Amino acid sequence: MPRASRPSFELGGTKVDPGSRQEVSLAAGSYLTHEELSLRIMVVHGRKPGPVLLLTACIHGDEYNGTEIVRRVLRLPALRRLAGTLLAVPVVNRPGFVTRSRYMPDRRDLNRLFPGSATGPLGSRLARVLSEELVPRCDVAIDLHTGAVNRPNLPQIRITEGDDEALELAKVFAPPVILSAPRREGSYRNTCHTLGKPVLLFESGEAMRLDAPSIRFGVQGILSVMRHLGMLPASRRGKSKGKPVISRRSYWERAPRGGIFTPLAPLGRAVTEGSVLGFIADPHGSAETEVVCSRSGLVIGRTTDATADEGDGLFHIALTSQLDSAEDRIARTTEALPVIDADGDDHPVACDSIRDTVV
Ligand SMILES: [Zn+2]
Image (cartoon, rainbow, N blue to C red; front, side, top):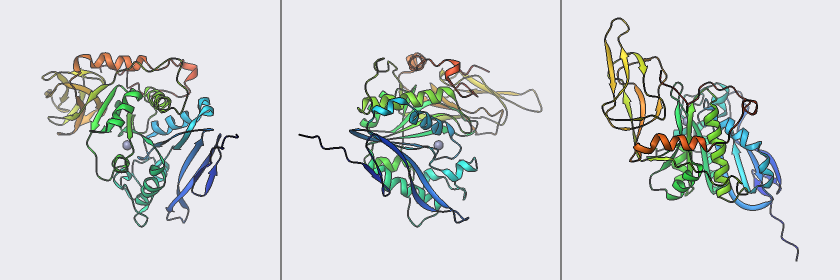
């Protein structure tokens, strides 16, 4: 008996045949120039049936690591053996991307406009297209972010507290840290959660920069999740041996006063209560004020600004019961990455967030 052929994937009136890929544009609204604003989605439809994975990047228009991660995933030869469907949006916030800005042209944060509306401002319309036309079609979503400008993050996955499915997938992704973060009203993650879709939010590196370790963790993590979901054949290397540090709470250690800031704790450092994380100097005098760690934890983000005002966030610290083994765990997740020689890496590395050294 002949096997029934797998149906095409239909999106926005376009049919993508099994074993092929096609870009689909979904109209969201129009710019003040009367040009169309659309969401551009690469649909890779596998020959074999399987789950639908939705990758999104650049909801904040200046967070480029995610766009580069999506670009590299789409170039992988392994996609020829894809089971299921990959929906990839390399740049969600295209107006922000063009202007090198985190925000929409009206200065709104797109990641506070979800689920969006068909009659709201441009960002809200973009959010609606994603919420209504893509998220309901997927089984799992991975959303790629970075820290803000001069606020690099250690590679980490953020999930919603109590979402066991997302936690399992986050462990498969195997970043250095998994952080349960409260849901934020208006965020893409909140909308995915409300629609019952497990969502992994990957945060790594900083805005405006490409960071090689962040990109490697992202590509490798997505591949691991796709293998776990049966979308790609299992790796000959076996499963990642990385055991991420799990954290359910984090806080910002803030500047006790303003001045010139010298950090002493790098990303990935396990720091203990009472230890000195850096100091703030009076630019006109000799006074130096120590920045003392108020609660033991792991440095998962920090500022690289040379100056701080009183109260500015300096170190983002994750609280964890695994502090004793945290640095070792991070080292192991890093070792689990494939070794890429200099010739195989076609981008300069502005900063290495894994091997960041004490200033
Ligand atoms: Zn972001």
